[in-house]
Length: 111
Length: 115
Image 1 (tube, chains in turn green, cyan):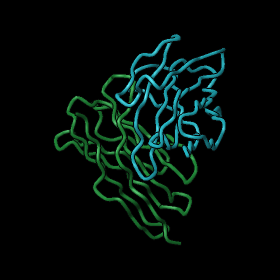
Image 2 (cartoon, rainbow over the protein chains, first blue to last red):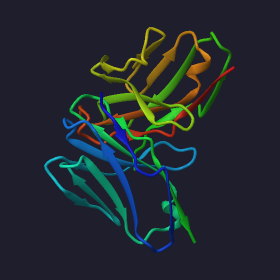
Image 3 (cartoon, each protein chain N blue to C red):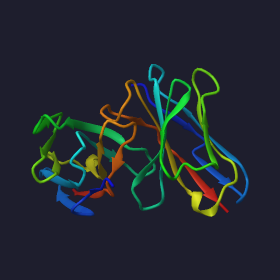
Image 4 (tube, each protein chain N blue to C red):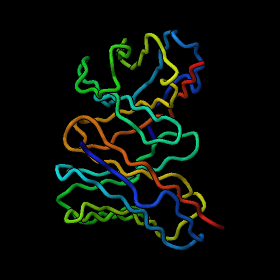
């Protein structure tokens, strides 16, 4: 079955530094990937997505990189701020009407 | 910015009782979803709904679960006879297009506690 997992359960960074959160997936049929941010007591909040015909996509302070060869994607956050502290999930889609979520990485920004 | 709203934020129910979780999806969205998240675990898909019928469901979504769009704005999840293991956060999501190649926008969830 599909499997989306995260390499690191926790990540601590200094405010102002760049953060990189990694995600591995196992379903080669997955062709759509999303990063969500979840703050305490809130639902997953959409950050950025990428389709499998792309290697890189940039948003505001965030970049997602997709390496289909090794089934890996990453979320880079530039100039990390205290408000970026949250759990980050990657999720994958295969064209069916559901997303498969990874287990999450907790990002802590140290002021 | 339009958002998905869910009520109640916290529901406490005795085991064996029926519970209905409510959601108001984003108004121009056509596809609706329920996910759950057991404490400390990943978000798991339950069911997707389009055009007044279920389009997909997971193994979790057994006969105890049902969904309904009773009017033009609400989308509900009913659990007929709750079990202790149903305790979780339940998230509603919606998207304007179908398939999992579109961003799904989530509400802040209902925390369901079964006693």
